[in-house]
Image (cartoon, rainbow, N blue to C red; front, side, top):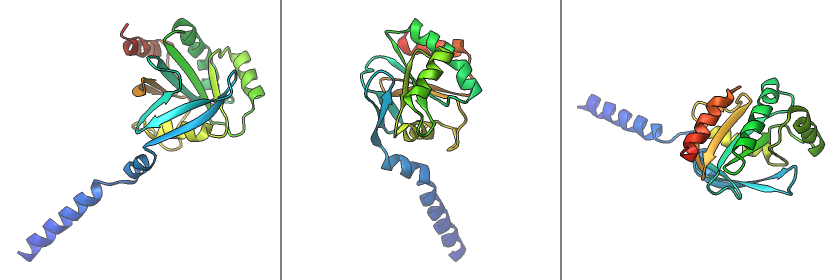
Length: 183
């Protein structure tokens, strides 16, 4: 009888601690937050977080593709023209928002990257760029804390549609854009 009670008690304690882990606690603490980021043409944009969902100010009804990148990254450079192509093709329904992970990157460095690689989409940078990128990455299933780049996450009205780790063919991203838009 004592052995049975001990086993039941250990099982109950194990189940209690299994229901609560660090990731759940972190998400609960940061259930809602705002990241203020600069862009090349405007003063600032807000990236809003509600639980595991993210939205960009002024994007109601549009698909948002957050591209977490670095200007020195070869796959990030290669994807820039593809993202620009998608931004042009779906200009009324899509916002591509590049978020640089580089600390203290300047507006001039981003402008140079845009020009050299044809990245005609919004580039977000500033004091909270790394926090915003980390927050987005932390909610993506299977993506570790020191995630690889490029990392893209697609949302519509704040809800995750899909995410992509590493270089991703334009056609795959476009297929998900069409699905999100109901086309």
